[in-house]
Length: 449
Ligand code: PHE
Image 1 (cartoon, protein in one colour):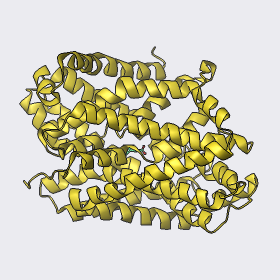
Image 2: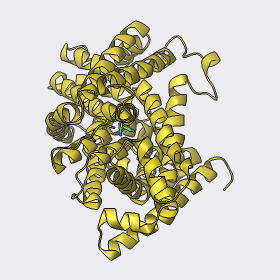
Image 3: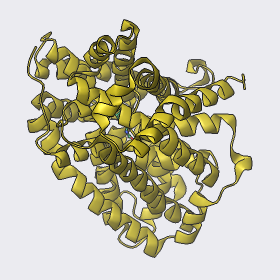
Image 4: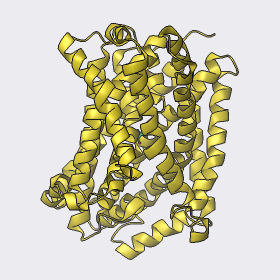
C-alpha cells in the first residue's frame, strides 16, 4: 500500500474543504430551490439542518478519515474492525463512491452551462436583452446536445486533470489560488446588488418565514441540500479529512468550513434576489434562475456585461473546486490498493461519469418529453433527487450511527480532543439529534409520520 498523502498546512485543508463545500450548490442550486420552495421558511429549515445535522456529521466524517488515513471505503473497513463492529459499515464507502459518480454526472453538465455563459456574457450577448430573449439564449444552449457535450467534456477534463496530479500538486495548488479569488468576486457582486438591486426585498425574501409555503417535500429538499452543500454523506469530506495532520483541531475547523459555506450561500442569495426583484422577474423560475433571470438583470444594468462575466467565472471556479472532491474518494481507493496509478484511476472515473453525464445532456433536449420522465422527473432530476435527497442523507445517517452507536465513545474522545462540555454536546448530536432528524424527515416524506 502506498504512503498516504497529507496537506501541507491546516490552511490548505481548510481551503480544500471549503472549495468542496462551496459550489454549484451555493450559487446555482440554493437560490433556485429557495425560490421554488417559497423563500424564508425553507431557508430556516435548511439552516436548522446545517446546524443540527450537518455540523455533527461533518465532524464525524473528518474524524473517521483522519483516524484511518485511508480512502473512505478502507476507512470504514479498518475502523469497523478496530471498533469491533460488523463489516457491513463499508457500505458507507461504496455508496459514497456511487453517489459521487451520480452527482458528478450532472454537476459537470451544469458547470458546462456556466462555462458557456462566461463566453456569452463577455461577448455582450446579454446587453439590454429582454426576458424572452434571455430565455431563448438559454433554451438554445440546453436544446443543443452537441454544444452541451463540448462543455461537459471540457469541464470533466479540467476536473480529472487536477485530481490526476495528486493532493499537493493538484488539489491543493488549485484551491489556494481559486478560493481567495472566489471570495473577492462574491463581495464585488454583493456590493453591486446592494447598489443596483432591491436589496431590502431580497433580504426580506430570504429571511421572512411563511410556513404555509412549506410542503413535506420542501423539508426533504432542505435537508438534502444541507448534505449536498456541505459535501456530506458520500466520503468527500472524509477523504479530505484523511489527508489532515494529526495535531489539528477538527471541531473548530469544521465549524469554520460550515460557516463559510453558509455565508457564501446567503451572500449568493443576497447577490441574486435583489437583482431578480429589481427587474420584476420571477424567483421560482427553477434551474434556469441564474441562467435566464440573472442575465436579464445584468443586461439591464450599467456595468452588467462586466459583472455578469464575473458572476459566471465565479460559478465555474466554485464548481471546479467541488467537482474534484467528487472524484477523490474513488480515486483514493483505486490508487491506495495499487489497482492502478492515481492518474489512470482519475481518468477512468472521469470517463464513467462523463458517459453517465450524456444522459444529463439529453434530459434537457431529446429526452425532455413526458414519455422519458419517471414520476414527473427527467433523468437529470432523478439523479439529483436520488443522490442529493436520498443517498447523501442516508450516508450521513449511517455515519452518525457508526460513530454514535457502533464505535466506542473513546474513539471520538481521542480524535476530537474537546472539553468535556463540548464533547457531550457533540455526543448528544451524533447519537440522537442527527440520526433522529434524518429519520423523522424520511418517515415524514414517505407518509409514515
Ligand atoms: N458541496 C458541493 C456544492 O455545494 C457539491 C458536492 C456534493 C461536492 C457532495 C462534493 C460532494 O456544490
